[in-house]
Image (tube, rainbow, N blue to C red):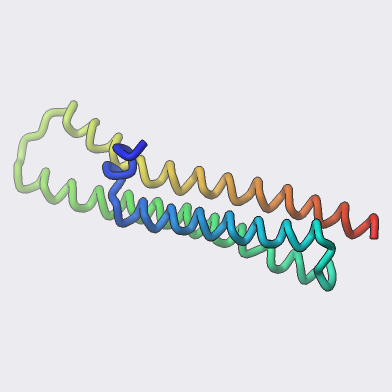
Length: 128
């Protein structure tokens, strides 16, 4: 697992991990407020839950940016070296997909959390 983290680039993978932790903290905080029934109204709660979706999308874009930066530097090296085998090129392309995959996974997690917490807020609002 740590091998993939380092292969994906510690800068972008670190940023993505921080975004994941922030998403989880926001989700747990809002879920706690909903379960405790300590929220003002449903619209305000849903607005705050929108941050989960926004951060998930930001993670996806950050992962794609990590891939673009990695590919740019890899193609610069290939340009300097000249002739590169297809196996080496395929291995490099495989490694370049690590950060977008991680960003996409965070995006999916954020949307799942958003759907579940929004559903729970709707259920709690109708029972109050």
